[in-house]
Image (cartoon, rainbow, N blue to C red; front, side, top):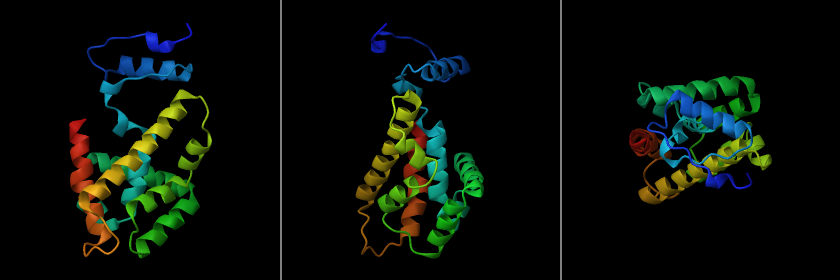
Length: 179
């Protein structure tokens, strides 16, 4: 078969272990999978790691969201990754000392670290890597939308940590509830 887009599987439940296993097997075989109703964006490793690193920039915000299991999982992954990546660890510690910049600036800086850098450098035909690249671009769009929604500007009287708290406590939490 040349055109995989002509194959359709219909399932009652896109989140069942069997469906997820089939999806992974197809991706590993190089067959792209499109499943818009699966709503598994927030469960992807690169997404959890990104939000964990983004959250790690502010210990105050971490304290505010500490009882939310999704964020705890994200932070756990970020801490684990930072232990193996001294450069990232140092960057996070340095960022904590200074005022946060524009969130899109922080987004691009986070993407400059491993594993995001490797994901973006390997723009190969591997469907799993293509999905990771797509997911990272969606995060950028989410951050950009948040900044527009909040009219987030450099000269604002509202401090960036307040915006970050609002991002995690309201904006992202509401998106997570929709999934």
